Image (cartoon, rainbow, N blue to C red):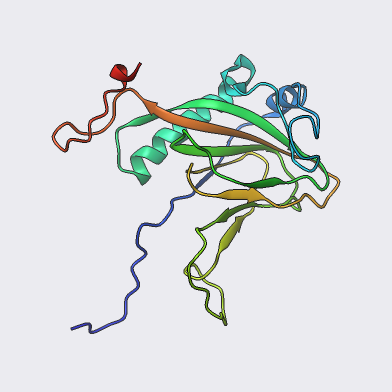
Length: 209
């Protein structure tokens, strides 16, 4: 018999937010000096401009940022997933969103965790928006909460890092201010073999090359 009310949050998505603790003026200068695809060169004119380099975190100028992100990924795996398996950064690129530019809804295929570090973002810039899968039934709502909301917007500040499961749909609404929004995104994959032989989940990645 149920003697009290209780709500169990089942299989929730973990979103990890932290802040780079050091000055990053030099890293921001390097990022702004990168070559970028011009608006409309590869996609819609209202999409953000993307760096031509899609491995920016491999560059020596951003080694401090990469080290910070790598340590944060280890912390995520250890504290959130309770795992000793480790991830490595695969691709990484910069997006620059001028006025009226946006990021369409998308996921990050071929990645386990993805993340975004913000070297430059105004407090009035659009927030990153995460969407849940479209429900098959829609009720009339008298209030919004974690169970009936279709999306969640998370505000970021300069220096903030956010990490999330790569299959979680997300977007960025149009930028309505004159100040540019600059973000550095990255994907990850496992480092070495993962899983457990006894549980028959072992994946020897050295055999896959």
